[in-house]
Image (cartoon, rainbow, N blue to C red; front, side):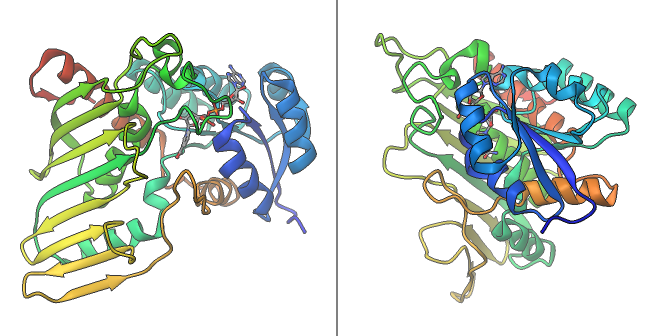
Length: 350
Ligand SMILES: NC(=O)c1ccc[n+]([C@@H]2O[C@H](COP(=O)([O-])OP(=O)(O)OC[C@H]3O[C@@H](n4cnc5c(N)ncnc54)[C@H](O)[C@@H]3O)[C@@H](O)[C@H]2O)c1
């Protein structure tokens, strides 16, 4: 039974993330109704509407012209995000944009400006800060559970997007610079950069990165023109140093783990234990927390992104993940890529 305060949403791009999270989570939200799906692949849009409701749209213009649509979820390849989001906002609708926010900071700034002028809500799909274990970790860190922070090591590694995408294959858009702009740094790095900003409340100050194409190849056997591995050293503005490894060549499963080192002990999130968070204290005591697991490509649990987007619209408030979060995260991604090209530390210019 849908509520009277119903937000009517169109999902633009009916691929994997739309099918795994956006569409099922809108369908389950009592304040949301799926008005339709817009996808260049008309058969896919049609099939998804039969499953989730609404009507298939054949162009973004048709979505924008429909006064019965309140909001749009952008789940299309990265190069479309800025253009689509700005058009949606200018048409007077709310927008949820998948990560990475855009291709560069000129685009992110234009998106934030369009949001401001429209007075509508723009939320970013950085879902890691909505994972229960990460919310619990922040609560523990803020309470000083492992003392003063000394260092962090964050990983996000899986076997690559060429089997995840709705159009699988070695020539996937994820491997094409013109459509993805970034390789693993934009795909998986975006998640952990937003996460460290959330966990510490600090922006990133500078970065030294190394990016490699170790194993991914196009159909014709040539290496892809984007990085499939990225290793970054960061210093946060609050002085905290750390390292992150993002990989599309983790052929042994998925690693979404974080280790945070403090003066009183070590926090392991999604590490080698069955528990979501384990605190290994300096005196040998172990404290364990089980708070709901993590989504993996194989195990999709509710992301919380859709519920937060709809709540922000219904309550008329800023969402937990804003355009500025997307912009600041993209600034780090862009600078890391440049650092790898130039082989030196670079300050992030926001
Ligand atoms: N938050 C997360 O954890 C997460 C996970 C995966 C993907 N993503 C992001 O979501 C976006 C989509 O990724 P995906 O894995 O679903 O990709 P996908 O390849 O599975 O799906 C993309 C869909 O968009 C359609 N499409 C392509 N170009 C279009 C256009 N110009 N207009 C309309 N439709 C178009 C395709 O036909 C396809 O159905 C990407 O930006 C990706 O980075 C986020």
